[in-house]
Image (cartoon, rainbow, N blue to C red):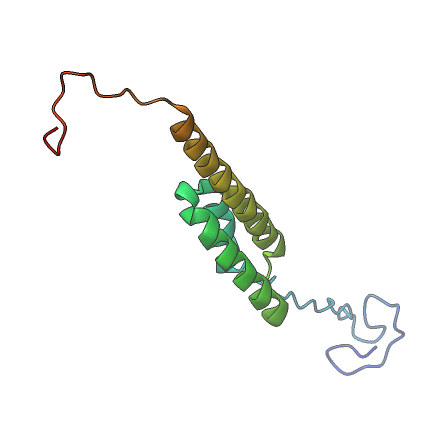
Length: 125
């Protein structure tokens, strides 16, 4: 391995045998920044958690599926967050359907009071 003055040396010597200059060359390491998280995946997961009366669940599904496509195309990070948003979106949709069906069941099972005999009907009878 040549020293900085150009003298030839063995590869394992720490200093030049002629001029005494250090022959050690630090290895060059190139670090590449990790890919950033996909914003749609983050939005999908947050909206799946928040729910917002079912609207958040629908948006979580839309953003989650869109994020999965973008991640597959671009190699960004966030596939797990997109999957979590999709799962939470479907759970939120199921919860919304359950809540609406329970509400309709409750409304139809509650007896409403009838008009007493002394009340006036709208049509005048």
